[in-house]
Image: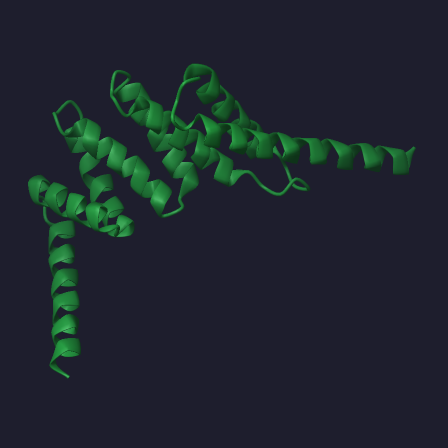
Length: 174
């Protein structure tokens, strides 16, 4: 009986602590809590905090880390459009980072998640395929190459199915 009550108190206590830090102006406290949540896999809370502090860390030593974690937290909470955008911002802001290759792949993968069913508009598929092909061409020896090729193949197959469906429509009309 005591254990569930203790867990409830801990959960409620951490929620109120999170709310306090979220509303507070202390950037260091936000950074520490964001990293804690990120490492624990609570990407939604981490993302809210990283989103608040990312602009404050531009040009600072932790800026690279904060910006990458922010982008990746978007990916983890399945906000793929935002993830792709933030990975691209990371690459532009830190072109010499050790994480550029991973960010490039994750950005392309984010856009691939936005690709819709072949029977629908393929604008997102085109964008994802372009990003993935750029990654493959830029990093031919990458550890992500096999997965990138697999994703690119699925995107190409989707585009081919779309082309076949369009051709079928023309033959029905013709």
